[in-house]
Length: 481
Image (cartoon, rainbow, N blue to C red):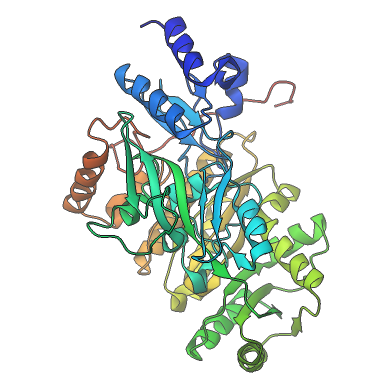
């Protein structure tokens, strides 16, 4: 059918106001949270699982590639539409459908904002543990697609450890349930058969689209203690990380920020970080009061013993919230330094942090780009942020080349390509650094079992022989180049 007929069919399913097709309006859906771009042919905003199923069936019938979109906060191009493809946006599907206090579970739609769920269930003495830095904006559907992490995933695990079940629409519009059924009033943690729920989480939108999600909730801890350790340099802060873990202590969270990051944050807000520190380490303990007090003494001793110049403990909840707000506002604060950011999401063994960070700094100098480090130190998940101005000729090319070099040194150190942001467009050509051709063929076979026509988020994850080339800079209308 022609375009006009197709748009009319989509309108019949979701309503006139929920089909976006004008070129100017589609620009809103061109980006995710990184440098990737791709304008969809049309964006459809369904309001229910049934509407998603019907939209997907129609797209399948017409041979249209489909990409799902949540809040667009992704950092690997996961929500970017394939050439000629469409997007399904889950803005309208943002309801918390059920909170089962007794079984510590909730049923939500994919457009629910991560922090909104956590805030809602805290009224019942519960919490949703995964807390990405974009927690105030990112949605559960995107978290599932990328298997999102966050500071508190050091102790509690990533998204996959907190998803009990899924209602999923496949590429042809078929609806299936994986794991515990969302319509069950007594969600269970274990189900018979293959763990397809676990396979689906982290599949980056290539297997299907989640329309209902059953998540595990945890009780709010009795006691919380948050430490801020200031160090003269990042090397001594890394030593402190290893010292704490060597004590057999696994904090709820352990986050590190370097001097560049500290200055950017403090220029935006007073988060309580020392302006002259070479690095700060944010450590949070949770549990029973007696346990937190005892372990806290040991953590504080480790910080002083490894060269901390200042150690403080948040005395009030407001102070604790301010410390974490600074950490989670870091990416936005980098706008004080440069208008663009290219974030690298590599993982290395904790014992290699000092070595790899030194090499990251050297790469930044070689390519003439500013590097800011803010990362999940406890599990070695690095986030070197390359800060640049894409209006400067060649700046974006230098940033992408530097990113590739950083990924190579992460793998060479015994690490891997991504900890929580996915492979997407940006890292797919680096997959052979970690996996053999046979490894990737096995992965493709799993994908093909879910989506045999490869209509869902095609062009992501697997190398296709052409290195990803970011599009040339295009000024925003009204903005001087």
